[in-house]
Image (tube, rainbow, N blue to C red):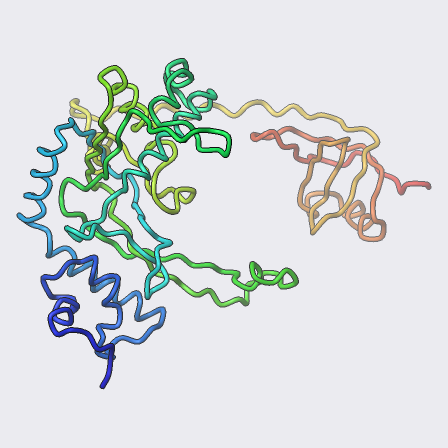
Length: 361
C-alpha cells in the first residue's frame, strides 16, 4: 500500500483539481499521497506551479459572498490599498516543501493577520514619534500606548489597547505566482572556515507570492478622533516598511493606486500633437586640477593609488608614464607630486604624476 492511509472522504479533497479548501491542499497535498510526487527542488517548483494554476479557478461567487457578509458584520469603513510589489505571507510556517504560506482555513484565501497589521502600525508609530518618518509626531507621542496598549514588560501590567485590528483580505480572489529564493553560500553560513566561491552550487528554493496589483481591505475599529491618524499611519507603514516576509528585498509594499494604472498614467501621451522634447542634460561641472604634493603613491590590484591623509585618488596603471609604472613594480610605494581632479560622486582621479622618488633615496 503506497502513501499515507487517510479516510476516503479526506483523500478525495487532496487532488489539485478537487473543490476542496486550498489551505488543506497546500499543507497536506504536496506528494498527493499516492507516490506520484518526489521530494526535490524541481518537484517542489512543479507542485507550486500546478497549485497556483489550480488556485486561480477556485474563487468566484462564494468568496465574494464571504467578503460581503464579513464587511456587513464588521460595520467599519475599510481602507483600500493595492500591493505594489509581490507579497509573501507565512514563509516560515511548517510545510512539506520547506517554504510555507498562510491561507485562511475557512475560505482557502491568503490573508494578513490582524496581529501583523497591529505590529506594523505600532512600529510605524514609534518611528513617527522619533521623527524617523513623516506624520503627526505630537499625536503619537501622547496616544501610542493608549491605542495599541502598553509594551509588555516584567514590571508593567498588561492592558488592552483601545483600537481593534482585524484580518485583512484581498477584495478579489488573488493571483498566486511562483518565486525563487537562492541561498548561494550555504557552507559559508554554517562553517566559519569555509569562504564563499564561484564554484559553489546554488540550490533554488521556490515559494509562493501574491502578485503585485492585488487590492486589500484593511478593517480597523477605533474612536472617531483616532480613526484619521490610524488610517494615515497605515498608508505610511505599508509604503515605507512593508508587511510580510522579505521586506528588505522590496516585498510587501502597498500603495493607494494599482501599479498598472500608475504606469499607464505616467506613460500617457501629451495632449499636444507633438510630444515635448526632453530638456538637455546639464553641462558637466568644470574639472579643476589639484596638485597633491609629496604624497604616497602605490600599486593596488592593477590600479595606481595616491593617498593624501584620508583622501585617495586612482587611475589605471596604463594611464601613468611607463617609468612610473616600472618604478611601482620594483618598489612597494613612491613619494610623488600628483595632479588630481574631483569627479562626480566625490571621488578623485589621477590626471598625471608630475615628479616622483623612492622613499629614503
